[in-house]
Length: 279
Image (cartoon, helix red, strand yellow):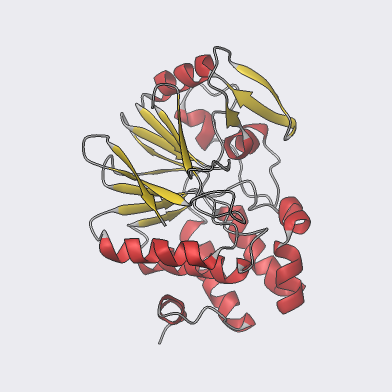
C-alpha cells in the first residue's frame, strides 16, 4: 500500500521515512506551479484554518468522499496551536496527492519557519522526530501556491488584498520560494485582514508589514483582477465564517480553536451561491 493510501485509510502516525517520501512528493507536485493557480468557477469547497485539529480534516475528508464532483481548496494554516499538527498536515498532503486535479493546498501565514517555530509546529516535529523531518515539512511550505483564481469569477487566498497589486501578473512575478515571507506582496496576501469600511489600507496590529484593507481597496482589487467574489481564511469567527463587502468577500475558519468557533467550510455552487457547511 502506498503512503498516500496508508494515510487516507487512517494511519496518521507515520515514520520519518514516510514523511520524507510524502513531503518529497508534494514538493515535486507544487514546485513548478505558479503563485496563483487556476480553479473552476463552480462546485468548489473552501477549507479554512485547521491548526492541527485532526477531527476537522477528517470531516473534510468525509465531504471529499461525499461531494465527488467538487473541487477542494485548502486556504492554509494546517499546523500550529492544535493537538495533532503533523497528522493533520499529513492528511492534507495525502488528499492533495490522491487527486491533484480536485484538491489544492495553498500557503497560509503559519506555513513559515518563523511562525512555526513560535506557535508549536517546530516543537512538535522536533520532539516527535528530528530537525531533519521539520526541514522536510519546511520544503513543502516554500513551494505551496499562494492563491487560486477562476477568471471572471473568484479569487482565493489565506489573508487578503495586498497593497500595490494592479494585475494578476503582479502576484505571479513574486518569488515565494523562501522559508519566510521575504516579499511584502506575498506576506500581505497571507496576513492582511478586511475591515468593512470605506478606506484603502491601514495599519494592522498583527505587525508592521501587515495591513488592514477596506472597501475601496477591495473594490479596486476585484476590478483589476476581473473577479466577482473572494474567499479567505485567517480570522476566527464564532460562527465559523463571516461575510464582508455586500457578500462579495467570505472568510472561513475550519477549526474549533479550543471552543472559540463552530468550524465550517464554504461551498460555492453553480450560481455563485455560497453555502456554509458545518464540520
